[in-house]
Amino acid sequence: MTWGDDLAAWWIGEVASDPAYDETVVPLALEVAAARPGERWLDLGCGEGRMMRALSAAGADPVGCDVSPRLAAAAGRAGPAVVGRLPDLDWLTDDAVDGALAVLVLEHLPDLAPLFAAAARVVRPCGTLAVVLNHPLLTSPGSAPVVDPDDGEVLWRWGRYLEEGSTAEPAGAGSVEFLHRPLGALLTLAAGMGWRLEAAVERGVGDAQAGRDPLLAMQRDIPRLLGVRWRNPA
Image 1 (cartoon, rainbow, N blue to C red):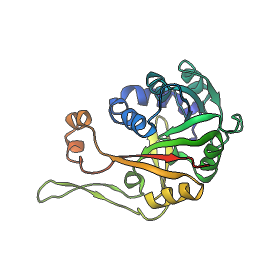
Image 2 (image 1 turned 60 degrees about the vertical axis):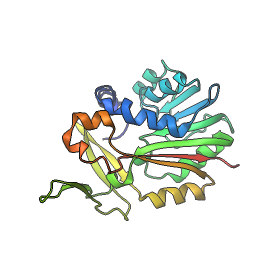
Image 3 (image 1 turned 180 degrees about the horizontal axis):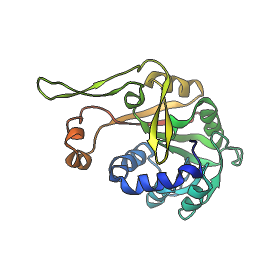
Image 4 (image 1 turned 120 degrees about the vertical axis):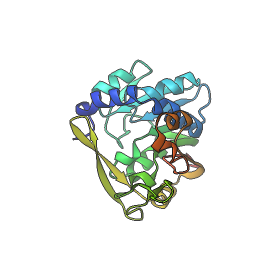
């Protein structure tokens, strides 16, 4: 199954029914974006517009794009939203936005170099590229929690972390592919496309989520999300 309207209903239900998105994903995205009031921000892979609404509430002026017409239509209630498949940003002029934000998107794209290049073109000089993704530790093929039988401590099995790879996760009646890249490979690729690293934030299980799930509560010291902010020096 590919991203598009065939997954739109699943995604809308997933976001709406998962309180962890509002509790951890949205705050981390706003933290690394650091959008200022009045700035124009591009939401890459905007889904149904959750982050567009968050950016608007922070005073920014959001515009979104998504491969799914159904999701883009829903996002249109928060601001202009274009139907398009990343990394194609040809519908935007050079230096069109102050910042670009991609939340839970990079781990689904097979080639990030064209996206980094396209974002560098449409983001103004000294503008921002901010991303939030599932931490590479989680997307590594074969990675999983391991419970120590002696003391009950929850550890994490790294799997094939140092290799690029992919896993398929259930999504409604189908599945979604998660592409794994080691953290060093991701940062090096962005640097090679001219982006200057400004902040990298690793985040674990949130307090509310840990309170609802004892197993997750035992994984507080294991990173689950990665937020990165780059600056466009061009």
